[in-house]
Amino acid sequence: MKTIDLHMHSRYSEDGDHSVDELFAIAREAGLSAISITDHDSLESIADCADASVQHGVEYVPGVEVSTVFPVDGSQQHILGYYIDETSERLVSALESIHACRIIVAKNRMKALHAIGFALDEDWVWETAGGRAPTATAIMRAVLENGENSSDPRLGDYIKGDKADNRLFHFYREYLLEGKPAHVPFESIPMAEGIDAIKSAGGVPVLAHPKFVRKREWLDIIRGYGIRGIEAISSYHEPEDIEFYLSYTQKTGLLVTAGSDFHGPTTKPRVAMGGVEGNDYRLLEKLRIAAGVRNG
Image (cartoon, rainbow, N blue to C red):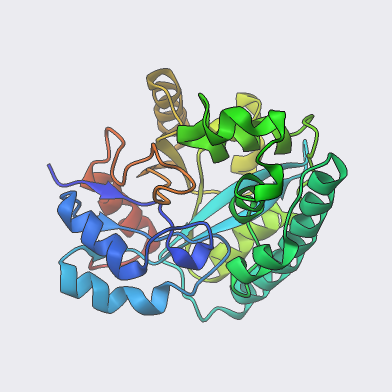
């Protein structure tokens, strides 16, 4: 069976470990027939992908992951855009607005971590980001890898203990999530605006990892904003979740996509490229038809 992975990140996301060429090489070794590199609020990878696709013999779907705010609860929700035109002025403008918001969030996160007593080299964070808005990954590394924090008893489990093998995941959940000591409200454009920006670029908007939508009945609201698909098959989903989302797409006529959200060993060490079941190439064929694209 031909397989796909339509959700992964390169170094253009700042929290991705691999170059575009490396991602295509990994995809080839994993036996994938097609991939989409969906960097966070960035179109930079697209220019590199055409040659890499040909060189490695892996089909490429132009993609992006747009960070938005769901107005019902203020949560951060991501919209994947496929077969986008990277020259779209409206999409580029929307991503510039998101970048400005993400810089504000990054600054506030660093202030919040300082406020609860963690040492953090802000200059290192900005240098690591390389001109992009720092993600939580860079900020968390700046705490966990800072020698001044090595004797902080709060960090023992993350450095050498039970949480060390997936330290960023655990630290995020225990310090940066809503209700946790260093939580900062997320700022970005509204979800409907992000979806419209993808559509203006000729793209197909798909709700990423819908498990992060707190109430399943809210999917109807999001569907009303104009999404055309749901990432029902995701590394974040248990079999029961997948069953529900597949049923929901059948009832509503939405497309189904499959993606791992692969970043590499730093941010998500337990997520493998193509490491989701049900990532059948036929899902991409339906997506391609929806986008009005004749050839892969």
